[in-house]
Image 1 (tube, helix red, strand yellow):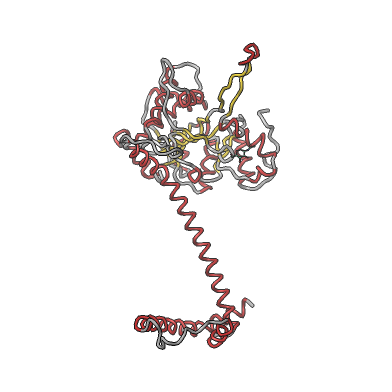
Image 2: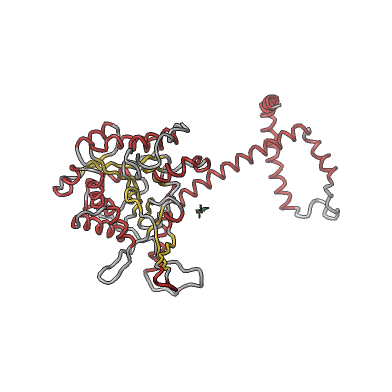
Length: 427
Ligand SMILES: *[C@@H]1O[C@H](CO)[C@@H](O)[C@H](O)[C@H]1NC(C)=O
């Protein structure tokens, strides 16, 4: 059936174009007649009723029923294709809208708040959450500005800090990023070996100018020493007007994270939480029986944000956050940068302290998945196993490299038992 139709199609091409010309002439003539004779040639005659049989009669005069059926299927095919194209356009528009969302929000809200306004009716008022971006200042670091202009896409990029201690993980990290097709990522190298390693792997790399204090920290380099550095280094990226998706190197990328950001907050971060409550906040009741009638005190809890993977927009509150964390890291002994990061984000103003007024958003903990969620829950759940995360962060486990490789085996190479040999926690 399909074959014979194709043959007929080629035979009827010439005839088809002749018909098309004839139809064209007919339409033009019709227009002219309609213009000059709006009521028809014989306006006294009632319009001819198009009964079903007369319509069929008319059609059979020009075409065989077979040809009509062919045309019908052609039309169906075309309209299917049309629907598909429309869907693609819609998806592109969605992406575009998402990309523009951050900027638009910022502009709108800035305009709205730049002069006093009356509050609107119930349910229509919305506070400022998307702060305006800073005016880029290239003089801060012209060399970095040049690199970012080349690497960034839409004024945003992934940034990781690395020294030679994490070379193995770094390789898995950028290989997974390349595989997903992400171009806008940059390694901040903390030693020369990493510079060479990146260059030989065609990975964009930036090494800071020597800075005694900061670089000595980087070289001693366990994971935690590096963590303290990044808040100082990130500042310049924001000052230059770029949004940064800061990423540790113990992370595997499985989709492009830039397709899954909201861009409506100063900080959008992955969570250490492992379910709806712990990730997004809950009422944790503190029980003190001695208080009798008032034995229950309600508290609010949320698992900390993971300071190894967050998206930060170039705004004043964002830069203030980085400065606060960097300052405390530099001046307080035995502090963990992730704890400081969370305290600065969340503690309210109180006597003797002015809290940070930054907008924050918790990322979806299934899409931006920590390794507790993966190894304790997801790998044991038939439905959750089918879901493909955007990233997996091996933050909860010390055997990082082998678990990263297992994640790739499982999600990229489809090896269903790749995650099975690992214990839930560290052995
Ligand atoms: C968690 O929250 C999501 C979104 O609100 C909801 O669809 C889901 O059912 C919740 N899961 C549980 C276990 O409550």
